[in-house]
Length: 219
Image 1 (cartoon, rainbow, N blue to C red):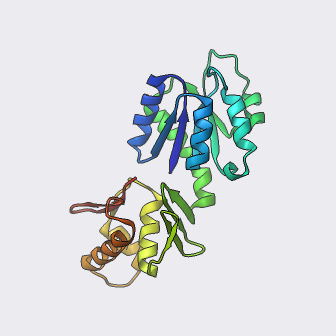
Image 2: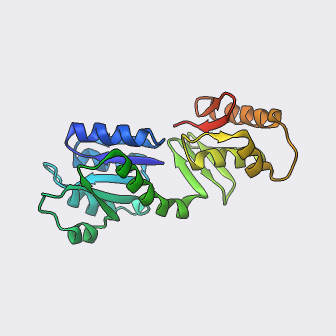
Image 3: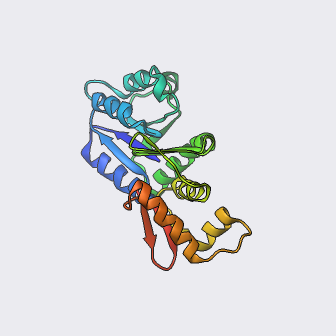
C-alpha cells in the first residue's frame, strides 16, 4: 500500500519514511501542502499522513481540498500534530480526517497506528489493489500494468494477487501452495513456473525470490 507523508520538517519526513518503509509500505513525501495535493492526485495513495501546522497551505485546508476530489474519496487521512499545538480534533474530523497521530511518537507505536488505520481500507479494497503502475482487480479478474490490460491464467492471477495483498511480506512455499492450490498436490517446480510466467508479463523486479523460503512482492 502507498502512504503519502506531508510535513514541512525534514527530520519528521525522514523518521516517518524510514519507520514505514521497513514495514513494506510504498512511501511518498512532500514538504508543503501544494506539493502534497499534486502527489495525492498523481499517486492516489491509500493513506495520507498530514501535518496540521505548515506554512502556506495548512493541513486542514489540504484535507478539505482532498475531500472535495471525488477521485480521492477512498483515501484515508490522518493528521499528524503536536500536543502543544492549538488544534481542535473536531475541526480535523469536520475537514474529513479519519484519525490523528500525536508527535513525537515512537516507531513501534507509529507502525501500530498506521496498520490499524489501513486495516479499515484493506477490508474494503482487498479485492482491488493498486501498487505503483500495477492494478489487480480480483472481482473482474483483471490486471493492469502500465495502463495496459495483461492476461494472466487463473493460478498466475491468484498468486500475484496473494503476493500483492501484503507488499514486502515473504510468503513461504507451503503457504502459497495452501492458499493457491488448496488440497492439490504440487511441487516447488509448479510455483517456480508460475512465478516465471508472471515475471515475463510484469517484469522481474517486482517479484523477489527469498532463497529457501519463498517469494515476496517488492515495491
